[in-house]
Length: 175
Image 1 (cartoon, rainbow, N blue to C red):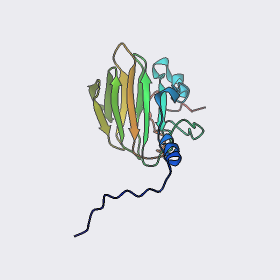
Image 2: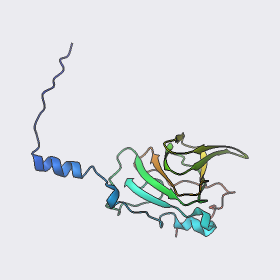
Image 3: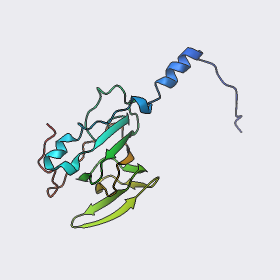
Image 4: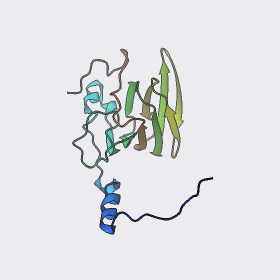
């Protein structure tokens, strides 16, 4: 039988620990709403306007390695998304990662798609949905206030999502 030890090994001084814990924090007052990262989608209509607020990594919105406010992602990404009333996230698929949405404010309708079929659920405060990789999904703010929600993707650098041929995003470029 192995013995469990509770002895702490002191290997860092207090200043090192302060710097280390600071490097692990992404504080609210240093975040910003990035309305530009998905601005290309507004070419298909103003209802696709939304903002990403990055905490860990870039999420599935592209390369934001120059954003020194976001913590480096090792195993997953974590951001907030802000959708004004009536705003939508178009149908898309993340082929390589599962994605979770956790609602902080407002009402969010999440729809999954399979061909011509779909199923939707309304999520509100502290509701969560986990969507497997390869599942087409869309989302929409169905409330009359902003919807703010957590978005987590299960990889440090997820592939960009793809859009089906019938999507308003089909053929729209990021530039």
